[in-house]
Each structure stands twice: as structure tokens, then as C-alpha cells.
Amino acid sequence: QVQLVESGGGLVQAGGSLSLSCAASGRTFSSCAMAWFRQAPGQEREFVASITSSGGNTYYADSVKGRFTISRDNAKNTLYLRMNNLRPEDTAVYYCAAARTDIIVYYQLPTSYQYWGQGTQVTVSS
Image 1 (tube, helix red, strand yellow):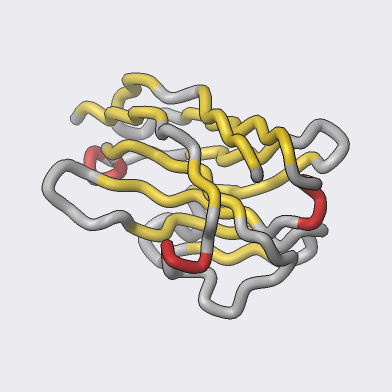
Image 2 (image 1 turned 90 degrees about the vertical axis):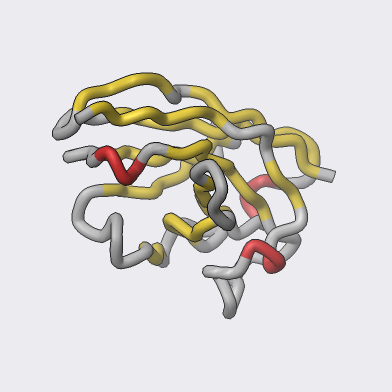
């Protein structure tokens, strides 16, 4: 089992920045591929970014590429998402997710991840 707790969400103006954190406990964090997803009201959960267990490879949705950065600190059992140049369309609940494996082929799919946090709200005003 892996327990995930997100933090760092809030309200920000368009063009601003926020940093999200995801604290993990339980199963060895350093052996898990990790990801961020988001879900806006009435919409499906959407892939944002993922990172392999070592942190050596990262992947991004086209909509956030160049603005968001995913990273991890295995010594602190923590996943991060730095979000710059935020837009109103980035408004959503952001979820941290963990997989049982260190590398995932279908990293964009929610079904590739077995453990989820409770989510943190990010609201971007125009």
C-alpha cells in the first residue's frame, strides 16, 4: 500500500505560479513511477505529467509542456509539480498517483496507477 497526501493548491491569478507537493508513505517510494492528473468539474480525469522511479525520465501533456515541471525527491518520499504561467483552463482538482512499477508504458492512463491521493484544488482566475 502507498498513502499519498497532496498539498499546495490554492487560488492564483492567470500568469501566476503554484507548487504542489505529494507526500508518500508505505510502499518504497523510490520504486514507484509517479504522476499528476487533474479533473475539472464535469470532465474526465486528465493526465498532466509523469516521472519514472529514478526521476530520469519525465513526460508531459501537450497542454502543460513548457509551463509545468514534475520532479521527485526519493530521500524525502515526495513528488512535486511546479506550475508556471497558469491559465484559467488549468483550474481543476489535482491528484497525485503512484504505480506499483518503476516504469510505465501507458503513463497517460489513470488505470496504470494503483494508488491515489485525495486531491488538491487549484483555481486560476482570469
